[in-house]
Image (cartoon, rainbow, N blue to C red; front, side, top):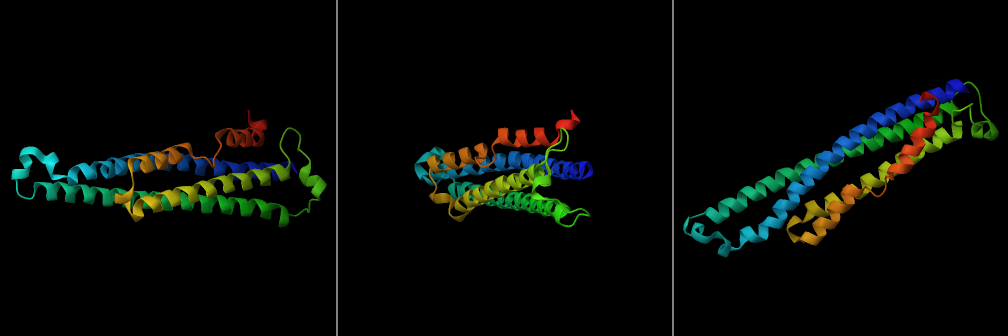
Length: 197
């Protein structure tokens, strides 16, 4: 049983690596989203001729500035979509770790009863806790990926129809990551690696 729980700890090490990647992607996503929001909020001002002062006299100035901003926005939105794909890759990886974790019990050399699955192994957690922890972490990240994907879809579908309030609300949701409660994640890892400290 102890060897089995150690195998689960290795699975959680893989999850930890994926969560570090997630955090890096989260930073990139927020930066790109802020950049996109800035451009979207600026566009109504740039579209209004009265905001150009003496530049109104320069042929094509307004159109050139707008075209550059739209190209920048398009590139940023493309980058955001690519980041969302990377989040999806992490979710798929967490799902694979969960399936492998379940397989350790199903395909292992010894079949465990429900009672044995619930027994803690010394100061280590039970096998059932390990599997539940993997499931919870996968579920959190999958739900958060789906939220991020929905937000990005709303922004990329028609960015020019979004208000500053819409963008601010979306950004708050992206920053907060409501589906990934940090304390719960830390608690899972603290219990899994209780013997490592």
